[in-house]
Structure formats: structure tokens, C-alpha cells
Amino acid sequence: MLPFHSETLVSALSKAEVLEQLNKQTREVDFLDKRSQYDQAVLFNGMVGKHGFRISKVVQKGDSFLPLILGKVEDTARGSILFLQYRLFPGALFFIVFWSIVLLAFSAFYFAVLQNFLFGGICLAVAIVNYLLAIFFFRRQVKISRNAFHQLINLQMKD
Image 1 (tube, one colour):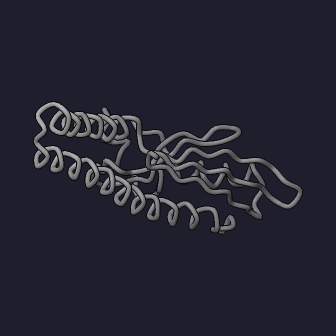
Image 2 (cartoon, rainbow, N blue to C red):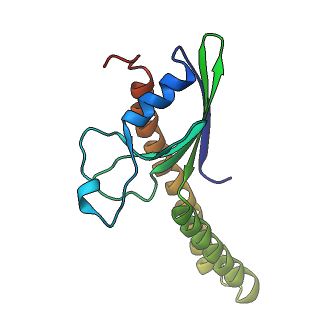
């Protein structure tokens, strides 16, 4: 079970209004151009398309557990429905999976081959702690990103 969260939101705003509101608060960032990175008016980095979006919350310093928000918006008779998925960025997910596999392999090696239960237990414990910390920090960042996203959608076009 990898760190992942999904939710479905119902908005009184139409699909076009939701995407317009998101587009106002989202920028595509060129990380090689420092001038495009520090606009205080935006909440999210990413891309907003005709049917959905791929964004992440703007942060001042890097965070490995920052969620990537994948969203799809569909029109309804009274507004729109937003389907959101919060995932780890592929690079962060790779390192969590990589170190979990390495630690489990060391644990199996110590248990089965060397029959050193102390070192095997230590490797297994570190693997479990690594996974639990990843889930904890991911959920904390999802909560922060969700709050920012919900505030943006609930603005009800006040501009």
C-alpha cells in the first residue's frame, strides 16, 4: 500500500469556473529561470487543461512528501464534480520503494542466510519505521494541500 489519497468534491461552480479559478492561482514553473519561481500571487505549480489539472502546492523549500494533485472536473446540472488524487511525485515514490526493498532484502539475508536475528530485526524495524514515517509525512502534506485547494475552490469567484 503506497501513500495515496483520493477524494471527490462537489462544487457549485461550473467546470469552466473551477478551471478558470485554478488557472488564476496556478503557474507553470521553469526551474531554470528564477524569476518565474517567486510569484506570491499563486498557490500552486503545475498545469491546468480543458478537462483537468496536474498541480502541487507552492512551497518555499523542497519537501519530499509534497503530494502531486491530479484532478479531473466534470460538469453537472448544478455545478461540477471534481475527482482528486493525491500521489507522491515519481522520484519520491522511487526512493521510498527502493529503500524499503533494500531493507527488506537485508532483513531476509540476515534472517535466512546468516541467521543473525538481531541484525535482521533491526533491518526489518528500520524498513517498517521508514514506511510509517513516509505515510505520516505524506498525510501531513496532503492535509495542507487539501486545505489550500478547498479554500481556492470555495472562493466562489469573489474577484
